[in-house]
Amino acid sequence: MKLGITGGRGMLGTDIKLLAEQEGFEPVIYDLPEFDLTDRALIDAMVAECDIIINCAAYTAVDKAEEEPEIAEAVNATAVANLAEAAKLADKYLLHISTDFVFGDDSNNPMDENFPTNPLSVYGATKLHGEKLLEKSGCKHGIIRIEWTYGRNGNHFISKIAELAEKLDQLNVIDDQIGSPTPTKYVAKAAICFIKNRTEGLYHFSSKGYASRYEVAKFILNELNINTPISPCSSSEFVTPAQRPKNSRFDCSEIDKVLDFKRPEWQNALKSFLTTINGA
Image 1 (cartoon, rainbow, N blue to C red):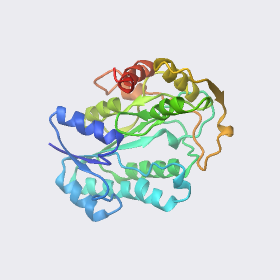
Image 2: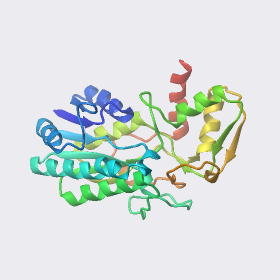
Image 3: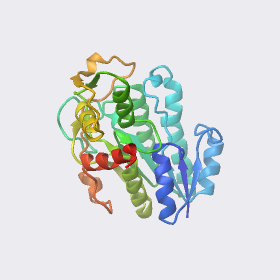
């Protein structure tokens, strides 16, 4: 069965491709430079060629999106609508990957799929618009919102902290953004579970448990035996063009009902990943 993966050379797409091959699918990568998600003709051709589509592609330059809202909208919303229309016409199942940036809550509440959205950035707003356009399309689809992802094939918070700790004499890390570090290899497992069963609807996925960015950074340094001093600070001390959500506590009780595996505790998953950084 041919599985089309848009954004297939990215961190998540790479892990999905690897697992899909192990599961007997025939993954086909659709990514830049040869595949432009904003080109409707290319979308139609891809959907015609594939039995199932997973959309991992997105405009993810969160800060740059504030300067390029039209491009972010074209990739994160309009292209999703075009994918959905093509999938509906061809009667194909589409799995779409979304984000915790659709939220902007400051409470300590775990957020389920019905929790009020309130994007704080262009990136978050365009990703939410893409979700809504997909839901209105009437095509067979699933949406998985993910957060704080890391993997072996990309740049992310985990690798950046490890690199900075080796270079700097002191680290200051935000302690008022709370979420769950989530490995892309487990997101890939969830995606394969969804496409096997053609699971429809909106779901949240993350590792189990919550921590601040500061707590995660302390965990990383401890596991890597790095003694660089680290101090907590607030989001207001790091001024960026795009505002980040402070509460990314996902309630994943709904997706737990459909997964064929147990989500990992964030500490266990991260500890395992860090052994690869150590070369162990």
